[in-house]
Amino acid sequence: MKRSLILLAVLALVALVACSSGAGQEPIAAEPTTAPATTEETTIMEANELQGVRWVMLSYLNAAGETATALPDREVTAEFGPDGQMGGRGGCNQYFATYQVDGNKLTIGQAGSTMMACEPAEIMEQEAQFLTALTSVATWSIADGQLQLVNADGQTVVTFAASEPGSLTAGTWSAVGINNGKEAVVSLVADTTVTAVFTEDGKLNGSAGCNNYMTSYTVDGQSITIQPAATTRKMCTGEGVMEQETQFLNALTTAATWRIDGDRLELRTADGALAAQFTLQAAQ
Image (cartoon, rainbow, N blue to C red):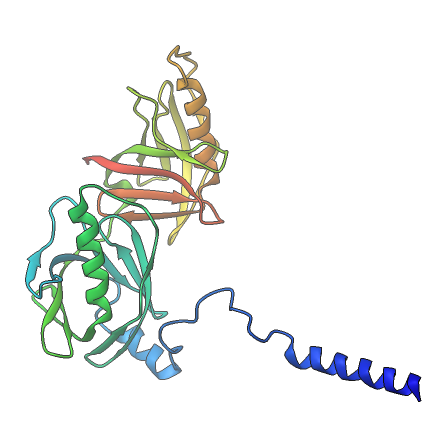
């Protein structure tokens, strides 16, 4: 009898554990802020005029409920994809969100973003107010190349202008950050310039900080492959210059995707790590 009671107790404990396993555990990732799009919604998104355009913010509704002009020299952008994802640059950070569209109705989910801090403080204030404005959007309209996002009260919360998408071959790109191969992106050594010029025929050349380099590249949509570069044979004596050159040339070969936002070019690895970041210096 005693053995039977012990056995029953063990079985009951096993059942209790089985029923309670996983209870109370937090999900690894937050749930989407909007429901997954249906086939019909996806078809509507594929057909709408929001897509295929790089939108640059002209004005937004600020925390005081007033229409404020976008800060100069800090582009705030939005791009809408056919998969229900949208995002861009908030003026400092990259942001991303889901969206759903049905005719002129538009819902944008709570945005996530990178976590950089920028100066002056007005940049961060504008970014926060812009991202808040996006979540209040109820309808959209396009007229004369401008996109207006309107809330449920009929207030225009963000106005954008259409801009041409950036091109790799737009001019000379000057590096501002390089992956050093040690899981860090570092700024350039003082008084050095690292450049990249992409040509229409698939050639890439520039200065690696000491030597000139030349190689080839191929693109397929936003994917990019850059071959190992040949260089001239100079030796530069500045501290860290030759090490930076090696890091830059290695970083180029790790690039798997490219993205242009205004005058900024980012090359990223297949894992999404930043390989190199550039600003456009001179248009061709």
